[in-house]
Image (cartoon, rainbow, N blue to C red):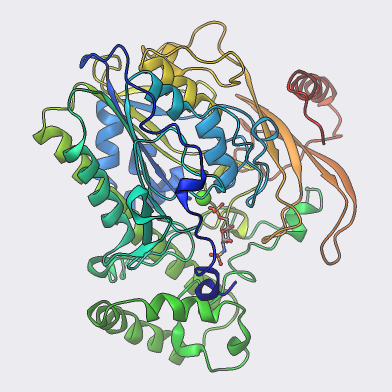
Amino acid sequence: MNKFKAISFVIIPSALFNYSCGKRESQNTTQTRPNIIYIMTDDHSYQTISAYGHPLSKLAPTPNLDRLANEGMLFQQAFVENSLSTPSRACLMTGLYSHQNGQRQLGTGIDSTKTFFSELLQEAGYQTAVVGKWHMQCEPKGFDYYKILWDQGEYYNPEFRSKDTNGKYIKEEGYASTLITDHSIDFLEHRDKDKPFCLLVHHKAPHRNWMPEPQYLDLYEDIEFPVPATFKDNYSTRCSPAHTQDMTIDKTMTLIYDLKVQELKDTPPYDKEWNIESLQYSFDRMTPEQLDSWNKSYHPKNQKFIDQKLKGDDLLNWKFQRYLKDYLRCIKSIDDQVGRIISYLEEQGLMDNTIIIYTSDQGFYMGEHGWFDKRFMYEESFRTPLLIRYPKAIKAGTKTDALVQNIDYAPTILSLAGVEKPKEMSGTSLEALFGGNKPADWRTSLYYHYYDYPAIHSVRRHDGVRTDRYKLIHFYGKGEMANDEDIDCNELYDLQTDPNELNNLYGKAGYEKITAELQTALDKYRIDLKVDEY
Ligand code: SGN
Ligand code: CA
């Protein structure tokens, strides 16, 4: 899409929407109720937070995020319900599964009559704010303050709108992660100090196309990142969707837009890349100083790459290395900015009474199975980082393996704020896990459902169930993109013996019992949750 054209039409006057913001008077305000800061990045893989111990993150440490984990709780089995931005944000706001809140795919869909947890907090006397990527096709509901990016937002000099800009997006100078933190701290500075607050900090980074900030353009340049064990997965035991997807580093990831080798833009066959214009748009919006720093860093590296005339595996490895470097540079900025929020809370004496939650809207493939992007129910996209620091209830260094999901966040925030969860919310508060023990009646499985097909990256619709050990996935639906067939196909993985999910056991002798058990669990979800397609 030509972002330049698109930006001129989406402006919706906020006055058209019936906010509750500011209309509901606070009741029952006491300063002892905890404050909440919920930080959510966009596409941050758990593999790239060093607290999770993955080999990649050892080479690119995240000390501020690690601090949240070390002083709080590390969730080792946190997942989303539908691994895509808008659906994930809708799960967060409503505590409902995608088919319940309407936001099944990336575009329109949200049923904005559903209650957002922010509305309930506001009614209960909390001061509420959201800053950064909102990405839903409805107005922010239940927020006293917002400062939101246009659509996915831009890394350099992004446009924001707030209640004061009359529906217009205004360009600001700076790097997205820094500006989002600036505005978050600004909200904290100017808040009503008689009320507790709930602030959602929604970063744009590290979303595609991974543009680092000026000070980190050369970070990690001399590091060779390890290629994942499944990088050359040939999908030999799987159903067709792993074969027909369009999200490989090899074929889908582009040299110009994704990997920023702009020097190739007039060279066949690269001059035909569909998104050359988008990269140019990113450069055209930079200040001369930003562009100068960028060119000084990337031009020599790119020229060296072009001169090498790499082919085959050498070219693929170069793409992987550039991808990892740019992605991890964006993560470095995120880690710094989380550190800035922590420092602000420390200076203000707010660390004890503020719950800090860190997560991502979904996971991301760092080359596993040869991929980038997300969407599949395979671990790296289904699973997210989740860290919670709250010294009043969580002992430093707590870890849990309890199965948790993004539909749990709204109930958790409400219960921490002392607000009763509406009975229609499907998620469960995580507060019961804060002590470090899993209650005997904690859920033993999770339901997943992905719907965004036909769409970019060509990932087929699927739903499935995951227990602590096994995963059953059902791919279904009519083939609606080139060469796609109608499908109705299952995969079964034993995550204990096959954590990389390479060996599909569905239909294999010896797995009849576990298959039947998982099928029963999946059918029960479909019936209980009134799932209407699968
Ligand atoms: C954009 C990206 C896709 C990505 C979707 C959804 N393409 O379309 O690669 O899968 O967003 O991402 S891009 O050319 O615009 O970068 S999500 O995080 O919003 O779900
Ligand atoms: Ca995302």
